Length: 316
Length: 166
Image (cartoon, rainbow over all chains, first blue to last red; front, side, top):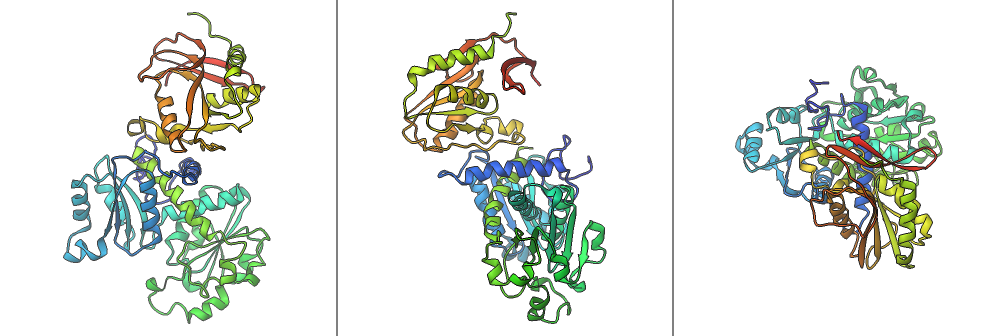
């Protein structure tokens, strides 16, 4: 535990880099705190003074709209000053190294870095480099992890299903390229979910995925049977190299979520998607906009979850 | 040291004292944890029509930069408009006054109350801010380094407890 770079000497969360390796009580602490922040986000004045005077730098080396925006809203609701850097189009193109960029922002009195990077491990590198009072939150690194998305997925599941100990969760689609799937699987197993299934064509499943404690299904009809929660993933065209799939249409035929396929899951199943959705590729519009869909509440919960993460790490 | 006063007696005494101050527009808010227990009792005893509010001041504490965020903050729930209300703010023990300051800051993010009165079961002195209770069950001498707080047993009975501060 002492070697976990995310925790301080007291076992408290100092950086959020990955759900993998986080103890159960730390995860539950974040979810409980987020529940209280949901109350704040429902008020007319949606701000609390916790991070007054702190500077949060959104450091996005990869394009993102939803994640960057929800981090920005969360930081502002905590009364922090937020600086958005679209690094992909500035210093990096002029040849500055990642750690030099961070050192410069540190010289501008940064308190918290929210980092999205195309390379797995970049937030770890930054966390090892920053000063003791500075904190790092991973907003998605390569194919590795997207811990705040995993946490908001866990929050959403807990909100609708209360208890993880009786759930069957099916994660469908492009598992291979999905940092969301990896973070969610680690979170679900840590919180004691008895059955986590991954469903996808063999070419989009990482080799050895069973080692994460999941059941593998290639046929969607089998994998969806009696599921309580169905998590659809985006088909990540920008990360595809080589011919992993015949076509988007072919993918939809086999792995797209339609009302007909969803009927195989439990009658009260919820459908989630981390966004952005490709309608007609991984999910049919009738399902995305249907009564089982909790895709938009996920976005709302995401703000409270990010407020919880930032206020916990910045205080440790 | 004199023995701690009986919390049940103080609670009954506070209810009697508050009775004349309650009007149909009076609303009550309890502060977690002890203040909520006390407020539940007073709210029922006084027959206050407006539903009880509960507040956890974790997001408004002034020691966040030293202590970090408190673990497992409860959700503040104010089920009535604060604007223009006469509020009774209830806590178990009044000490430095910092909790009450935080609670007032949070309250003003819900609206502008007509007035706020502070109700506490015990006042142990040691104020660090210009705050006082309008309704106080009893003054209690507490040695430095000790923590005075309200407890509630399984039967719902209230009792004051003195412990070494962590």
